[in-house]
Amino acid sequence: MAPPASIVFPTRNRRDYLAVALASVAPQASVHGAEIVVVEDDAEDAPTRALVEGHGGRYIALGAPKGINAARNACVAHSSGDLVCFLDDDVEVWPGWLDALLAADPRHEALGGPIRPRIEGNLHACGREPLPVTALDLGPEDREAEFAWGANLALRRSALERIGPFDERLGGAGDEEDWQRRLRAAGGSVGYVAKAGVDHRRVGRDATLRALSRANFYRGRAARRYDVFKRADPSLLAELRTLAGCLVHIVRYRCGVGVTLTALTLGRLVEALDPAPAPPSATDPDYLSGRSGTLGRRGLLVGALKDILSTRPRRTKRGPRRRVHVVGVARPDNLRTVARLRRELARSRHDVALHLAPPAPGAGKWANINAALAATPLGDADWLLLVDDDVILPRGFLDRFLTLAEGYGFELAQPAHAFASHAAWDVTRRRPGVLARRTRFVEIGPVTAISARAARELLPFPDLRMGWGLDGRWSAIAAEHGWPIGVIDATPVRHLKPVATAYPRDEAIAEAEAFLDGRAYVTRTEAAETLAEYRRWPA
Image (cartoon, rainbow, N blue to C red; front, top):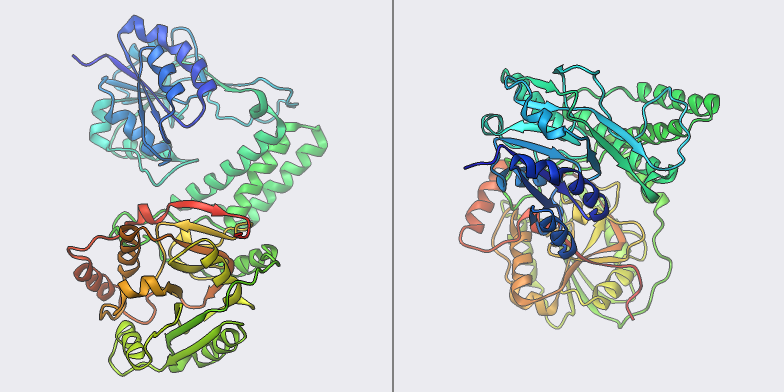
């Protein structure tokens, strides 16, 4: 028989907070025969498992961070109660909390109660603005509410089955609101239960002004993203007006909360000017990134500024002199960029053989590259470098790039994309302060380096026109052979044109489907993983 309620906690590495929350709910769960389920949105933590099981609960670990809504969906899947009571791991429930939820008006399919902020620090608040943690107070009586918040949210299982799971693309803001919007659109309602309250806690370092402001900055970014998601984002001018008001509040009232509100608004402004990558499209095949990676005018300008501020490492160790075979297709429209490529590669101290030839009429990219390699074989070259004709290389590119690729043992490597570069895969975007990263995935362009060892396995290349899915296939072959592969952040390049501007997207997908049929490949989830970061030059 299913329990009357499931008390569920999505959590990630916050055992001390969780201990207080579990201690407050376990006695109430015992009285009503409710189950407790904790889902770790990360790898398993043995002490947390022991804590949960010590309170009579079940502990499930997702293995890696997947997001708050993925953890909530796992909570639903691993519980069986008729009422699923979601709690944040940093709350402490009030006496009678579960009594009140179980006795609530059954017409409401979603329920929430008071959320009282409790910051156990010395934050100075003037009282005119809310404290910088999630709060809710709709009065002393039960009533219908527009929304309840995830820190204290109960959903009837019948509604979860009718409305569907939480949208796993969302997190940080709007993650629970989106589900309730869908519920209300389907004719459901949200109830406020005045006696089902919780304290929302911040203690220790988390209660300092610095930590609260930092958290609010990222909350602001997430809130702006959700406003864009629901097409309700304010103008940049409106955001600036809010920022001005926050600054005035700090000066006028000497209020610490004003500082956190300023951080929140700065987060919104940063997100407006430099938006985080959109979530992958759920409808795209899993061998694609799920994002276009195309930057608009504002994105290119902001990216260029970030590239200026993110200085590259000055130090360059001199590795052995290598023979580098460079192959690419030089289209007539891109001859100026190709000339710039030639000049930069010729500047290298390595022995560089350049083979950038015009495409044969009617032939695809990979047929052209195979033809170039047939005419000028790789021979005893140490590296094969594939370059597109619409990419700009940084000065001193090849010497630094090969030193790092060889120093970290990569058999396949690519330079990271600059911030002002069209890049579909977020894992290939540069990381400031990092020299290189070992990854599970390397792109087939705009610049790809293949060691002589890897080239023996990969040549000749398949006769493809566009080559979508080939990078996923190469990355899978690398994994099968145990080859380290990675991205060199110290040599960011600029890809000048968005993907799929020279050919139909549908044809590229159809070609990829046929090519990958029956072949192993790295999925976009696997491709997003970074296995190691390198911040020091290899010995």
